[in-house]
Amino acid sequence: MIRYTLQCANAHRFEAWFQGSDAYDAQTSAGHVSCPECGSTEVEKSLMAPGVPKKTESLGPREFFNQVRAYRSKVISETEDVGKGFPEQARRMHEGEVEHRPIRGNATPEQVKEMTDDGIPIAPIPPEPPAEN
Ligand SMILES: [Zn+2]
Image 1 (cartoon, rainbow, N blue to C red):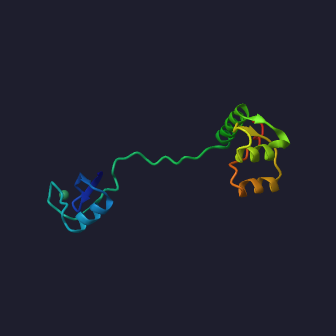
Image 2 (spheres, helix red, strand yellow; image 1 turned 90 degrees about the vertical axis):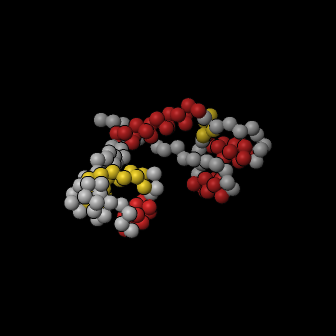
Image 3 (cartoon, rainbow, N blue to C red; image 1 turned 45 degrees about the vertical axis):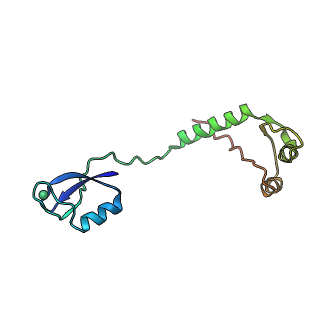
């Protein structure tokens, strides 16, 4: 159910509940919704409907970099650095030769492609953001 604030042709405002926007369209176009004050069936959604303005989520560069830093430090604190052995280690884990554990390390773009082609779940660690001024 959704609630709409409606306005009739005489500018009376009232609220009505509908199953959904399709139901609203169907009932108003069929004249089933009438103004409780004047009975007009010429109703439309009020543009003055009180509501919470939609908040646009936009991160400033500072917030973005802070999130990147937080993600980096979490990854680095929770994984073991295996350096250049990363592709081999990741593959052996994927193939069940060694026990799974969170690792990080280096891989060339070719190695990354081979691993993703083979379905080995890897994710890049974002680079350290520039220092704040
Ligand atoms: Zn009215």
